[in-house]
Length: 399
Length: 123
Image 1 (tube, rainbow over the protein chains, first blue to last red):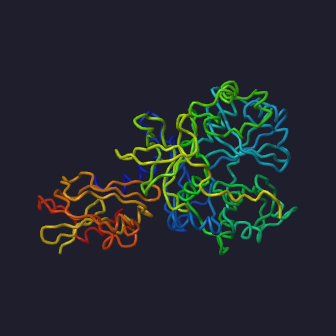
Image 2: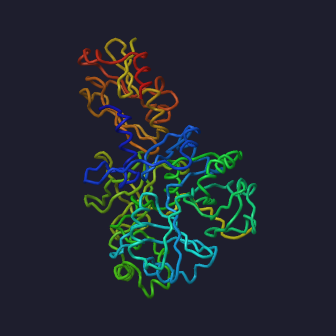
Image 3: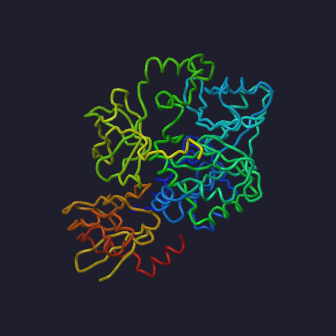
């Protein structure tokens, strides 16, 4: 079938989207009905092309991935990430219970702080990557959309009865990202503290359009930006308010993926899976110092051993020679020897060239190592590159 | 010159014995920003349905298969150098390749412009 946009295009998209929910049942998995998010009608009215992602109808693009990507790097983009799971954990013995699962040091996670963490299985395999925050009377977790149901089941199974898990299905999540995000958001925010009091990986409670919202200074683009947790019932009002600012345009999942790849941030289900450990993925910062010394979390034996001996393979970034994108699944060779596989790749609009990420044997993981990726039977020269590909612009100090 | 369209969003402009092949405006809109195009070599024999070209947009690779059988006589080097032509002028400067036809009968089942427009309206 020539240029089959109906099927071929969809199949290509599906590859990089949720492996779990978009599986057509080939391995017997049950197909779940596709759900809608609070901003579904809003996206469609804005001209979004909708696709299935993580079990939801989601906007893949509005005006085009390239334009949306570049707009976010220069101005501000509004991303609807309401498919992600927002959870709170509360109850007696909360910190000890959470530390028995996650490799996080909660003694250093003070009120108003957010930290990257990992949900691991008994073998140290990555079940999900998470953002964990200390709320006044709870631990707040943001989990990936495609994995949240499994995460919830895992947490319910392993947490003691005294700890209550609340899945906040009545909340939406919006990310406002880019160098002009602060200016656009500050015009509408009030609260006990000014928005400028927030620095990277801190959160606070604010008022936005008359609604109580939680705002974290964080994101998934490498830019300065914010993630806003708000009542689902106020999502349209707040999305309209923010997109009414001249600096802000709605941005789809396509640009979200190219932005995060340039920022060197792994995507769960592609660069991270239960077959990978935080050590091989280069996510040791997700295993806090005290936990590296004393262990006592899921998969600790495997992971502490791997830290000592070094991982057999490593997740690295690649620059790609020429213009042909090297995509997920492409095999990586050193001469005739298969040494790894690409896990994310595509054209990087801000770099102006293809870039990629993938796992290679540790002997081939040094920056500057020349390798080849195979695309449609052709060998494409690639080179292990330092990440991020585009410098992070996080605001770490108040101003 | 007669222009034919396929259900797979290619156009074929027949001029004498030589057909020029490209993708339609609808196709480029669906694919999004095109960043790389691989075209067939001159002299390549194509059978209808063979892999003929590859279009890489920012997020996806799509195959373009031969809409008819024949031999490639020219490819658009300007398009390889500037793949965005496939977005900006898909049915003009953004043509893909030219081929001779070994079986003109293969054109019979294809659509004309009005038929293709009606077909896109059903998608």
